[in-house]
Length: 572
Image 1: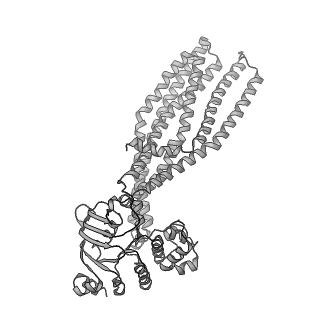
Image 2: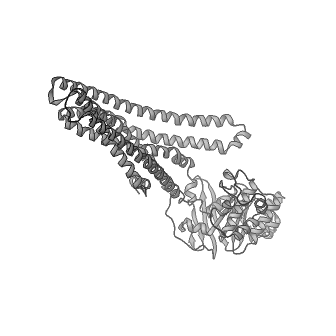
């Protein structure tokens, strides 16, 4: 998909169900333009009338017209007041909603390669810039353009000769703006990049606060933050300088244009040529301001709009990058098992984290994966859950290769319990059900099996967990993760060091429950070499240096007296 098509998908979100509010606001602005032009005309009538020139209107009529213009201006303000904020609010809400919904369509493997600061910046700083420079500028551009056009038409009506001179003078601001216009879009994009780095540094400082304090690394953290902060502010400063230069060039050229026209108007008025009266001189000066001001500001607005468009494009490219073609839908069952064939994987493209893995996990059985740290246990589990598709070899779920299964279908087949648990800032129940509707009895069963009964009894299902579970202990967060997976009742359960934060008794009870469930294929990465638990698994896979070194039941492995025997003996 080309860049224009990508950007168009996002800009369309501004207008869905939002055209009425936009149209009402635009009517308000168009009427406001008409009123402003009429005020200029009224000013000319008042000046000429006060100079003794017959304008065709009495003073009472001019006052009445002025009152009518004030009333119409009030009506315009009311239209804009009620419709413009509504349009902007809905447009930005739909834009961000669409962007986030498209982001959630990315696979785990694609998202894990990316820097989340890119998206944090896109949804905060970039979104604010888009609101200001893209949406709000629509109204300013239309109003300024109509004012300019209306002023030129009125000027032609008063004096074609002066109008021709005015247009020539007005070309000066246009020429000045072309010099710097394109640079602003580049500067805005550079600000967005620097903001990403700043957000990343801020996020690291906050999420790693306890580590920073415990290792007394405050000075280093402050230095990193200050460098990132300096970079973003210096880039913003350069952008502001460009904007100031563009504005100054436009204003300076506009001032020269006004002085030039004023001199011509004064000359024609003094010589009595072309019917130029004092009132016409004044209105020409005012109309010239309505021409030169947009010419000075519109180029900057167009440059800002272009830069905002670049940010929209950047958001689209980030969301649609690192994606793969979605596979096909498959039934949410596992009849035969999961088969791994010649599986190899490398994080850096040089050294293999997994090498020539061949194994078959039979449906309905339980498997423990053990081994020393760095042996490839979690990497293998990550690949089974489509955490990365950059492997060689094959992973089959029944007879379908993993890369040919759609994400939706895959996550109807598997549930994952990980060591690092994410908790929403919501209730215990919502974190267990993940905001879906489940029968109360099913939820109660999952709560009981995961060891959450005491927590729910003490605090209730409606207890708010806090940001990322700050109101819960590590063990309580882990139990919620286990309850989530049990509640889903998928045919495959993948567990990665899920009970590391639990005491031994609770860990044993929860794993005992998991291993006793029927019609469930369980693949568990564990560091806990508890004999009573290991005897419950149908097979134990022992990994070493990215390979399956040996496998079998607990008794079979102990009888061999090889690598597993050594691991188990040392752990006791």
